[in-house]
Image (cartoon, rainbow, N blue to C red; front, top):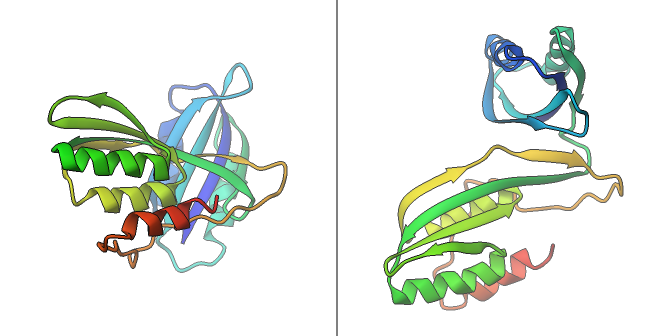
Length: 193
């Protein structure tokens, strides 16, 4: 099961290594880890998305308890089931022709991404969205020739409004409809936000 953990930690050169060591010892697979400065001056916030490899139902609770015992850890919170604002950054370089470039421009309106570099034969796209939209867009872009891509880890903040917005989650059953109306169908799905 996928869990999202938010950790507030004092700035320390070995802090991240201690956290990763604990996760691997407890048999959690790290899906993404993001560490950056936060609202407090001498602290950093770490957002970890892990997959629990064990059968224990309370493994995430045990993980949170173990993380709290590490030095320089100020706060640990399992935010998996809280209303969140979640985002990732995705950069992708595509080899395209003129027809494909027009199709990608239409996709840019639907997915609200930016074309940040353009040449006669390539495009670089910048996408900032939740992981569901990024996964859906990546599956759509697989029909083009992908030259390079990079995807950041997930960052998240708890929504104070407590509004829980549903989004398309990673789903191995997600299929691309190749009919002529597939762009309209995609618009219908993603304009519900």
